[in-house]
Length: 479
Image: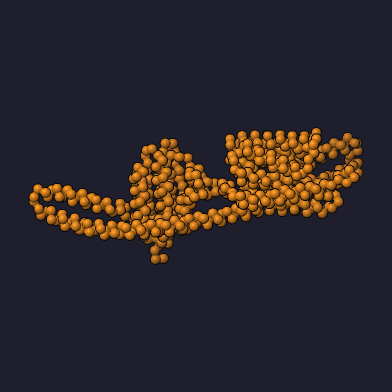
């Protein structure tokens, strides 16, 4: 007959392993169905291998751990989408956790057994339990209570361990490199090796009888749980350390990309300003020449005068096209909006602007340039994918020391929000190098103690609306 405690432990492992894995990997099918099937199959395989087969053909602890790892990886391959780096971390961290927690629970079980044994002896000595059948009944009841209490403690400690890893491992979408994967799983492998060593130390056989180290060296009932807790803490601390390193490098990468974008924008804007400065000079000269010709033609009464007037009118229209269509109060924002207007026209996107540069506030024009460039680029790109009713609108206003920029566009694709950043994920293949636009916008806004707000209207399936509002808190000029 199978041990009740072993069955309870198998049930806990089956449930926790499925739920834990689903937090890191993407299910091939419905998540609830996947967890249910995982729990059922994982439990049945554990019982067959570790209760039926092992009872007939005993194998050592190393083989047991290897079987656990292979079973876990096989189940991941069946139920979850491929992700080798994530699968290895989830597998080894879970196996390490359950192997280590097992010894913490065993010490608590021994301590509980000692207390209940003394209590039973006291009842017998006091004469409250006399008959053998009463002793057997009370013993069985106490044994079952100990089983459930031990299973509960095992589930509690393992649950805390797994939930801490799941909570601290925030960048689950991050693609691990080989060296990063090794860094993450090494503490788990070390914990597994130490758990095998502990098993060899705790249980020994002398003269055909099993001896527990707790009986020969009582101090181990304190030190073994301490060692186990430290091992679990080492795995969790390693996850926290790794996440902090990844976040640090990610922030540096984003900061570098933003700085490069600003430098590139400064260079391009300077070049465009030089070009348009020459064009303004040329436009001024042409208008002077056209004005002189116009005055001359007005004095003529011959038949060619009307034809010359039409020709001059066409020239004036051509020269006027050299002007920026939008006068925002700053040449840099004029240039950016003018460029985006041209891009929108080429894509067949209706482009409306009501924007003014906040001269009264101390806000770097290049930060506003980064915001406009990224926001309008994203908006035009999203609207271009529509077949009709393509539009992008830009609006700004000032309230006290606050400067608001609103960009709205039509779109028709599914938007997936990133759980970590709260921002929409990029639809492009290489998310590491794409999808930085909103991040850069947010960084610029937070530089001025502001932030961004995103509202998505999906009431119309054929045309949805994406509204981005950026708030910047600028000091008044001269303050």
